[in-house]
Length: 38
Image (tube, rainbow, N blue to C red; front, side, top):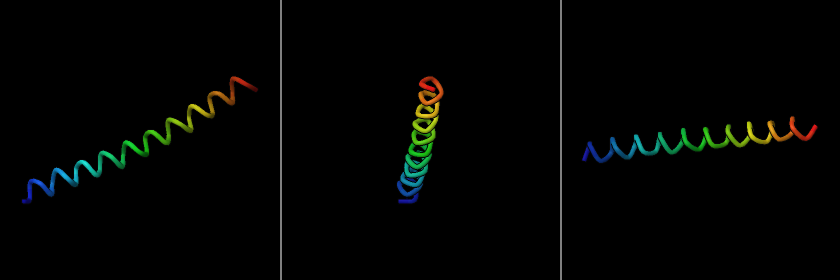
């Protein structure tokens, strides 16, 4: 039971970090395309 909860917590943390990383990458990509167009 505890091991299942632990793996679930780890998965939730990884998903949250992945979401933040993807958002940061999208913002970086948008800013980079803005620099190229201007």
